[in-house]
Image: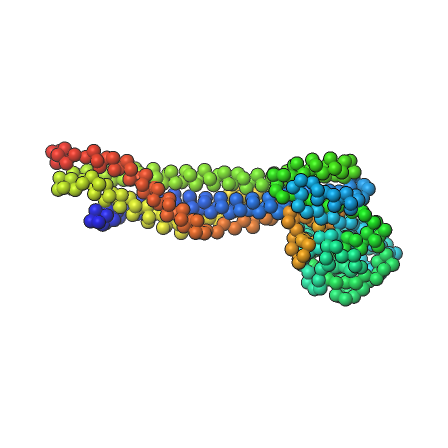
Length: 449
């Protein structure tokens, strides 16, 4: 116990050296903790993106391209049959139709031509888009055509199997037509009841009508037809096999694409950050151990006479080694405590800087839109796999925005790592010094004096 106390006191015998060693160790520990937290945050984001976007497959009629039309609608029967494909867990289908002034009592709030290529339907205003879906919910992942997140501001949704003539309308469209929950409008000669109103923050996306798939099929005379489907696979690793199986099943009647390659390309910067943080973490721990090792060797050489005297007075090698181990542990604990604070404070800025430097802040791309206009089948939640809406054109899946939202936060694992790193560094730093102490002979030291 006396040896341990002497070791702790000896750590403060030379204040300048103590400060220097502690600061250097703190920098190394701070860097290692920052890298650990960054690696954890990036790994979590990679897993999140893969689980929410990378495991979906979009199926659309061959040649179909949003408002440009083209292609022959797929049959709902064949789309439902995709549930029998291995590893497919869900299929979301939709049918996109348009309402003009001759087929509805609604007035479009968007003038023709104000939206570039998406306008120009004649009559002074663009046609109103109607999306029939079997996957209602509260939010559109990414928003319609680049819009924001859909939120139901009033009313309720409808069930996936509903056949009722009901609709959820965008807030812009509702305002332009003085609609509220309980109001009715006509479409295809039928009275449609408004059961909900949603908002996205996008005028274009807020001008749509969302209805049960079966209802739109019946009203538009499109029985058993769908214009888009999003297939969810159980894991991103099974996407390629599922794409092949779906292409074989549907043949040339459908264009089958997956988000896998897009997501993998977009995740490349994060994978680079993950690799960099891993190597930096290892390097900083090894560097801290080397720093302490050299410091302890220098201290042992300086106190060679002191060690010889202690041994001459009866101190055992074990006791002397314990004294120096206590001293090195004191250095590392102080360095770890300071480094822990620094690492926690710097983790988020370092993570952001690494992601931006790797190009992650601008990741993303245009991905063919899927079928699930509104998220999951109950409540207003996005579908697993993040299916988009309606199959109309393309939407920007903002992976770059997701990367900018990476938040590095310290947890108990960081604290445990700091403690473990301190113990490892102290052990390595004391190992060679201990061998030097054992070789010191009291008689030789005293004779040289």
